[in-house]
Amino acid sequence: MAKEPSFENALEFARDLIRIPSLPGDEGELARRVVEEFRALGLADAQTDDMGNVMAVARGTGSAPPVMLSCHLDMVAAGDPAEWEHPPFDAVVQGGFLHGRGAMDIKGPLALQTYAAAALVGRAEGDVIVAHTVLEERGGWGMKVFIESGVVAPAAVIIGESTRGDIATGHRGRGEIEVVIRGVAGHASAPDRARNALDLVPAVLRAVAAVNDAEPADPVLGKATAVATGIDVRPESRNVIPDEVVVVVDWRVLPGDTRETLVARMEPVVRRELGDLPEGFRVEVRAATERQHTYTGKSEDRPLLTPGFLMDPEHPVIRAAATAAGRKDGAGPAAARPWAFATDGGWTCGVHGIPSFGFAPGEERHAHTNTERLDVEEARWAFGRYPEIVRAVQAVLA
Image: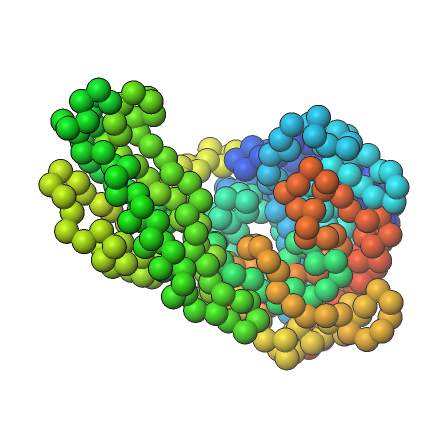
């Protein structure tokens, strides 16, 4: 007998998920728990792919295009538990809130989406895909491969990142660029024998500031920004003059940017600020990469770039979703506005052009903090809106 797709059961499922830590690359236990719930809810084709993404389908009654509900399995680290009002993995419900790491980013919404899909079995005009991905917090490798695989072909995607009940129409992307300065190492007691890579850092910082000043702005998403966020020195010994310094640049990009376009914008400005390099120095501008690992055993050097995207607020899918969601006070359609942070929608819409938007309870200001919480009554309201939003989107796409 299938588990009842009620809000109360969804809330208990969310609490179960919060109690399972799931850092990027270590989502296996959580994935198994989610697939178990898929099956208990009577969802069809519950499965895990080679990346570790999980999916299932709520079968519809007609031929309307499929809509996909999607969250991610990974979370950011909780930090020092002593800094939390409630232990980050205890999933405490108190004061009208569900507390803990993942309460709103994104295990609470993941539970709501999963149960909302189950509530639509045999009640939607088309299939409802529910898919939760790995490694979203590190650039979205899971979603990238999932969509490219062609296992599913959704006509629209609803991302479960928190919007406090608004309809999120897009976001800036995020890229990470490195400016690598190489010199000649030496003992700090004999600086004349070395070429100190730190000497060129001021010119590189001026270049980053100059690039930032020249970045374009979008009337909805705002200005693209580039800012130096770190300086890595090698070797790290304090009595050695370093022969390599890496200046890390966090770049919030507008839709359409790639790692190639970012390097092409940064490199000439760095060269201009540095002028003729002194003998013994070399400089490289490159896209940052990291070695990523899935819990299923896949490994790859991945560029740290999440694409941006932006849907027109007058797009039929956005208008249908906003009308179906409504405002919590009942005063007309939900507001349509962008997120401040990046999501897997950069892959579904920004790269693959699938109409995508966000809808979920939760305040964005609590994401990645030790105050993370989810308003239980807002979550109850959002849970009730998901079926209406799915039906409205399927109707406008049919």
